[in-house]
Image 1 (cartoon, rainbow, N blue to C red):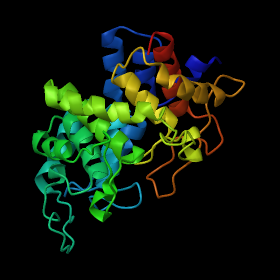
Image 2 (image 1 turned 90 degrees about the vertical axis):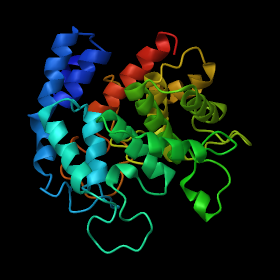
Image 3 (image 1 turned 135 degrees about the vertical axis):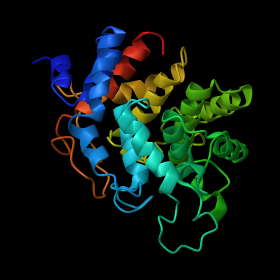
Length: 310
């Protein structure tokens, strides 16, 4: 079985993206496959786990991956059709019922915020903007907050309230994904586009994984690839964002592309690496070190983007 056939022998959430990004099937074929995310396997399983109060895992957010925040992120990355009845129902329940306290006592000032109003950390809020924008929620107030929190070096950092003055990749990639999704949903604005370009420049000046000051690798774990990435950054996540943002003609991604190529196994697949600790509702891959359909799909489309002038 060749690599493309192996990718297609999988969940609808992977198959429809293979059809869109690798095999370039007709739009109606892609849409039909995408519609199955809501009714079959992984997507259907997650949707069935939502409680009547809108929560997954009984919580709006947690250190594990079974909560509302992380399940909604996963459904977005699956490509659940926002116009589907299932998506509208699930997001409607969250909008109606879920606050950041999740109904539990919490003395933080933002605890009673509705879920899509966000909280205080830009790493969290960037992800909320991405998910809300994707599912058709008006995220303009939270976007405005993020624009006001951009640091002079072009990125963002969750630790500003604790004294940080320079950006972090992990926060920046979450915010950039949110701003891109918001632009896609609304058409964006010159201000948002400029902020996103400054954030991209922050990443590119550092070649996606090197310190600007010394050229050293910022974090060796970024040279291996995870899925889901959750809040973590790595080279493949950064490149897949730039592909999605349609960056072209910037040779500062070349070294990061070589990292992707170096991770390919002799069979032309990419392994699952750096599995992030935390409870999940179910496993999607065969385990760390084994060939990963998610990583292979993402790596293949990144390499094609680069070959075509990315």
